[in-house]
Image (cartoon, rainbow, N blue to C red; front, side):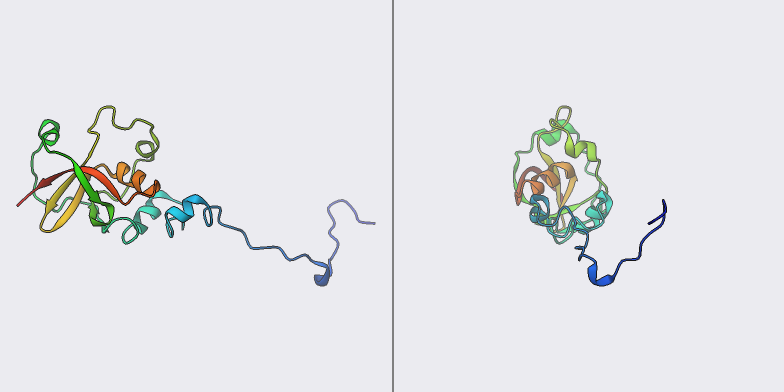
Length: 149
């Protein structure tokens, strides 16, 4: 008879084979949509892995000169589709609330703001829209593109 708290030794031959822990995103719709993004589980880790998967490159600054455009001037630029894999981000982190909000454009522009400079397209505003498009398995999104010389 075993006392409370005592353990009985088990014969290894009687032990059941326990499968290794499974990552819940592998094989799920999220894992299929964004292969390679589930490693680590943190949004910053995910953003670091986005280069080559969704975006051309993940940056953390605006390398182009200040254009001085305000919302009214951006609104005058007609939006058109841009490919996500041609975009270079200007932010390394994402506000998760902005991504998950139903109507995240209440006070802002409906379209992302992209600056074309020296052959690259820099995503200045709209990272949450771009990531949401990727999560919906879209390869393009509508954006206003400002051409800087």
